[in-house]
Length: 327
Image (cartoon, rainbow, N blue to C red; front, side, top):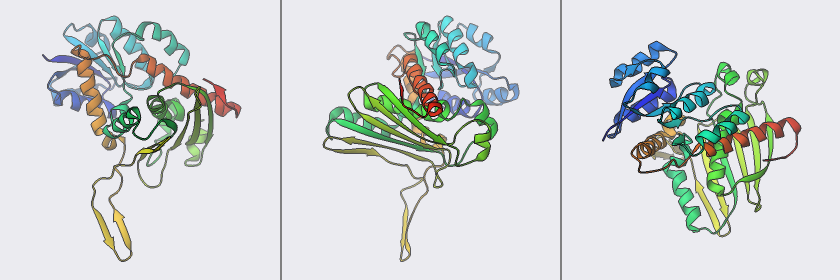
């Protein structure tokens, strides 16, 4: 059976999802909806989809699922409308920028077929790391280091509407910390600075952060973020356990190395998230197909989206106060 999907958003992430929908044997891209009609038409023409407004696509009885990859400030409203129409929803992160609104929406969407796109849970390396932790091969998890550094900062225009570093970038790491720790953080302390681009600071944001999380049992997690690494897209996790370390390192463009008298050179890291998490994007789309087929419930549900947003909000408050805050 083939399930028809309406895609909201024809931008960078929308194009990735459209390609993966078209490549999946159980899915068909039925609609592409975007305020930029030209972008929607270009994307739809590649895959034989229709172009229209959100109301028209949601009202289509042939549409089983809706994928929301629009601007962040539209995520929640579109998810609510699609759910009300009986569609399964795949919503990109964050679910909203307003924690109060998101918590209120959880009463409706919390137990609904709403899948939140924290794609790093579906990365083969991080999924394998999680499996090692569950198996206890290195003993009980005690502390965690999550490193996520972009190769270069985004445009300032993007920063102004992103919701800030914690809600835009660190939110992935907040979800990873929850996923790997296996319990909820109860206290958080955040440091932040603008060290990369003064224009980001002028826009009211930070570009470098360290966040410390503590769970009720005493497990600790440190999240390290920068908008510029200086050496490529830096994505690492180190889990320190009672009998050893479980780690997942960076991915390079190839495994080729050149060794000479003056030293060794390796291939650069994969360029950015579109390349580094290509498999994760495909895997999460396959999971959405399982949800549509009734074979699975969302592994990352709306409650997970709200929990990550709550940590982002706590980090913002901690940074403003210069003190730890309860979560």
